[in-house]
Image (tube, rainbow, N blue to C red; front, side, top):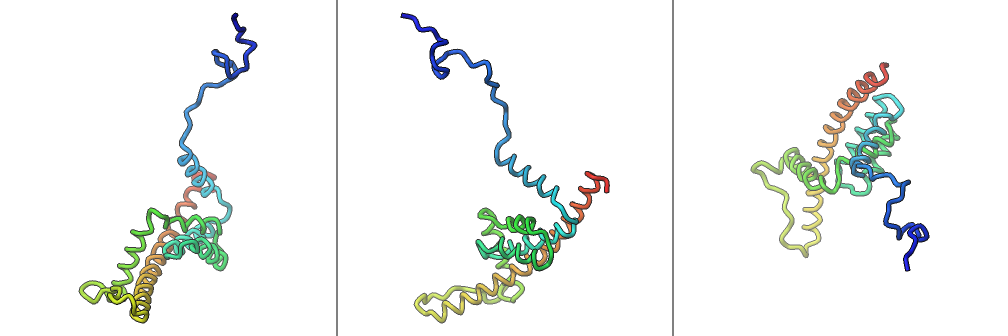
Length: 180
């Protein structure tokens, strides 16, 4: 007994359906999403200074080890100082799970240098007696002050550089793109 192929459902037929297109070569999702965010960044509304101000505050907030609060702090600073809120949120991405350790280790070393703990002087160490709450609290406070001092200085320098570079970049790009 022979079966007519046209009587079978489509999924059981041997021949390819004439309405199917051959698979196209597609960009990876990551590359497409980065390109989308890049183009979205370039098409933001506002003056270059307004956009760059938001980005600089985001980078400043991203230099602090306040996981989960960086975006909130960056956007809050952008609101207070009239910067672009979306670029402030994007600027906090300077610190991410791949860059946390190197950034904060560097910030800590800068804090040690600024406060005079490093370079031949007594480094900050955790106490050997973990049962002494006062010793542990005292070392932790010194550690936090050292880290946050370095974070503040590095964040300030990084945000100023980000502002200067991004103002020039956005203004140049818009002039090239729109001729104004």
